[in-house]
Length: 516
Image: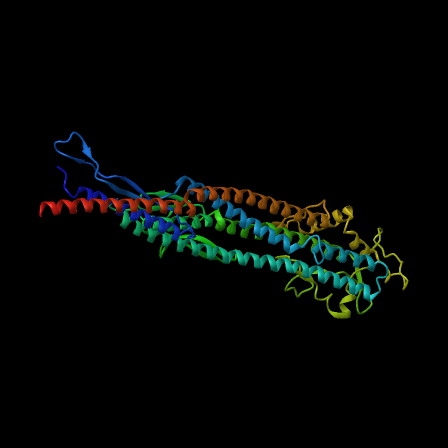
């Protein structure tokens, strides 16, 4: 027959099981606001039954705890991490492109378009009287403002590139730190779950939270090997059980920024290529700012300076001895000291020729006088046949919107640079559009890309939020549900305690009568 105390054993199991359930409920409530926490549930089941000799059947032996599990949907985790990678990439791209748009401040005051139009207007005003020093000073001042606006673009873009390079280094450090933490959690989870009796639920939550954060930095592939995970990035194992392959950076002096590399040992380093996540966006936008947008403004400034210089050299000014001299370059690169040196732009950090900027004497070097269609001076000025000639000033002013004149000038420039290092380095000037049209096209393409990336980010962000809401509905703690469970387990515990007390009374009566 069964043991006399079998009923007490059933009651003991019931009390213990309901107590564990209550403690698990308390654990859920305590972590209701913990990031990454997944609610846990006690899985109860009937304990192994007992076969009673002489009785046709088996008798239950109470309740037992099969496991304490966490409520988690792994497929949702996979989807969310993919969306994290896409969303963080698009968010960073949209942020950088928006920042670029703010640099140019168009349309608005203080922009390049306004400075360029003031430059043209100054030359147009000079045509009224090329001997007026105040009008010449206006030309020089407007040109200086135009250069300062370009210089500010150059500085802002260079600073943006430096900021993104610093962000790349910070992202690499973050990836390495998270990889080390995941490897440490792999070890702890493996040690707890090795025998297959227990589940390291809280440690798994911490690891999943790190995996979510890591997926925002770069695209990761996760191989779940029960007790630990293996993480690969572009086919390279970042984490393998407790081993971590470090991601490093190496400075490239030619480009002026850091590039990625895998560090397999002190003397073993291979180039790394990451094209997704916020790190991939930082690398991509750093390249695009330098080689797309900065290069485009570089070409714009170079062609503008070479065009004005070419026409300015066609003009004439009177030197100190009263002789006519052909015009010099109006714009030069920063650091230029020799007025006879060729214009060799290395960036769009141009400035007005220091000779022209040299006080009142520099004003006389502005070559506003030009030859007429017969290649002769036209006596049209109020102070004699030559000083009042305004032909060259007028031609420079007409560069604004006279496409025929612009094409003639730029064809002349192409003839000059054809076969030289300038053609090899920068190519010939493309003919057809005015500088205002080129600048407008540049801004239009930038704006379209910025708007497109922002819309893509909004779409991806919406998808991410929807998936996170679905995961929250499954894994997050519901205080109402936990309170309901608490009452249910509390009542079950109270009932088990009443049963235990009743059985205790039965045994007490039995003992009293047996041993009386």
